[in-house]
Length: 457
Image 1 (cartoon, one colour):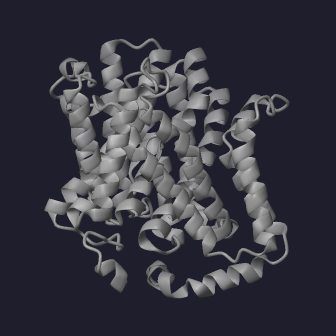
Image 2 (cartoon, one colour):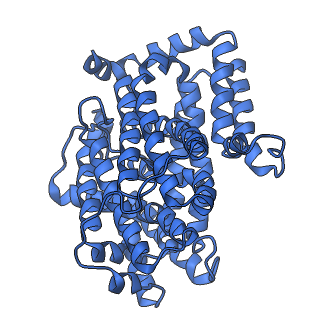
């Protein structure tokens, strides 16, 4: 830990450091609040597609929370080679919805769960062999991926701030004012607060926003009254079906999510710990994604993956302790076992979350810029950045450009992240000058990453 870090109260750059409980619990709570809406929204959307009853909808929210908690513990604590042992919060991913929604509508939820289970197993294999292909993911490529994750999430944060896509009061003045209040409180506490107040600034902003929204009558507590006090998640409640078409689509998206996970892990180590990720962290993190997804399918919910908003929270707060996230995982499990507690958090308006998301998602992009700044920005690398960003940002904005491609391929192209990563990896591999750039990068980062490499050996 550097002198600069130790001079900043509340900043913890070492993943293995455990802060006192009086600090760790608030840190953990803000992680849970940051990911909560994103975690429960996909199952709510699926519930509408399959025509679920109110009881089934509450059940889908419950299992999404329970699985997210278990998968988070798998990442932060780790089992054997599985788990990055970093402050990674897992949750139900929006990234699968372009494939899941049509599958659920035409084939039903059992086909989605069966395809998810197989995709999780494929992801485990991908993670197990990641070390052998890690040279494809240079700091240049990973920096581009992290930057694009942040850029992709920025509109999501602003949509939250406006009240959520499809909301009747979207962009209403009260939503924007509440989001602005959360943003203002977060910035003031982060910049002028000390110790816990600064590191937990996002939590303070969310609590203030929630209270103001409740006093203004903008919080619907019906989810609390309808939820049970205690409920044990039941595996295979909807069953599983294995459709080749569903499996192919889900596996393709799962590999894309693997790239996002690599970017998120790098975002944590670069933006929070100030170093590049180790091969063990990358491999374990991707394998945990696969195990978590297979486990999620058994417990009736959608694939799990590392949540990017929590990556931004780690970079913003400076707290990289994985034990904080472990507490967050335990809280998520409790919310899944006691649905009324989950209902209280579920009642938080999206505008409240949006005020914090604006900062957190921007911090992810900032981590990508920080990694790109560590790479020599010569003509070769600027060309790779230019082409990759054009594909990643431009393709999703151009309607109809994917009509000439098969449906599954079109889905990958429309994501933006896949073509950007592919172009980045290929150009970085074939253009001359890569070995020199990689050597310079390795030498410049030797001091920062030496402890991690020693641990790998």
